Amino acid sequence: MTTEKLDNVHSMLGQVSADIKESGDTTHGKIDELFDVMDDLAANILAVQAVTSALCKKYPIEMDNVNAWIEENMNTEGQGAEKTAMLAEYLTTNK
Image (tube, rainbow, N blue to C red; front, side, top):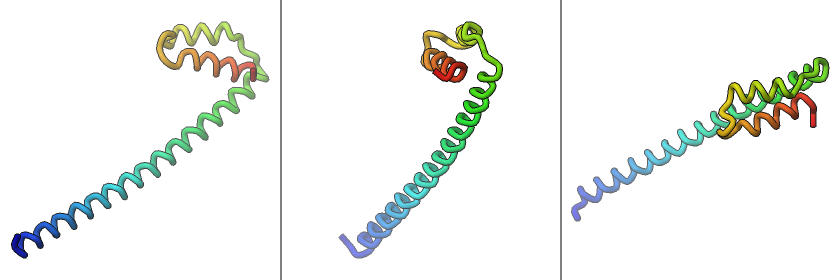
């Protein structure tokens, strides 16, 4: 292999290395952004849970009405309906 070809291979390997590093840096930045968004979402959910629990203590809610809403607005055979009902009961009764 000639020196020119070796230099070309070396240059291309350097570029691949730089591209991999840049990709890693971008991925790391996106992961940090994702964690920030997840943290904000968790804070929002906990705030809504706190307000809902306080309101339910002051103004009791009939679970039959809550369950009827869940049945009317969610696919009860799909994922999430059972968890939604359990969480709704927890929020309204703290049990």
